[in-house]
Image (cartoon, rainbow, N blue to C red):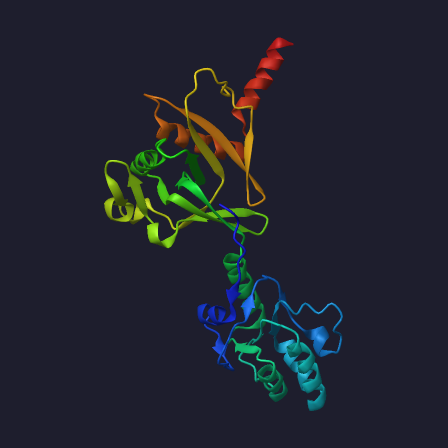
Length: 308
């Protein structure tokens, strides 16, 4: 499925972060599509070159103190230049007083003013984390997502290969279900892919012949997790006898998801193979590699040493 371009309304930001809405308009249509924030100190000083007006404008104690030093007509001029641009909103920290000139120009150009009781540092941190999560690039993939021994494992494969049945076996072995069938994936910064389930099917598994099962009810809260990082992809495919499969583990594969490379292993499925056990071992092997020990490479070193 294609990546979704996201934005979020200023109204929703105010509600989710419990910000005071200082002014109101009949038709509020302001949207935010950038996780970056701007403290408009340079603009309040009169410098408007390269003004990042597309960002939320945050006014803290420093900006407020500087405004106190300006004459009312200068404050009015500066806020007119700021508000005449298509800024999403202005957020004032520390429950600071709203200057009359700010209110006047915000109302003139219908720019939302919000206010927070948090200090500026905490407000910016809260805003950034919230926007990063809400506006993160998102993609939905078909598969099952589980956390196995602390490793987020995305199980993929064509429909009917046995992903959900394998997930049930893994749950019985003490591992955690995050999502079945549809996995919503977000890229957070440059470090992590985080997966969760769509709300409507959260904690549910569909098994052919049985139907929909509520894992939270059947196995308890200890069998589920709301979200997890995606560290490893296990792709299940039908065994082909004439196909070459990696037997040593030296052929390392990666799959691109939202611009990030994720380790991938392919497990061929055939009768009598315990797929749940193999996935569990694959997760353990991944953790071992992350801790600096690569069994296949160590074996290769021994072979090379013995042949010298």
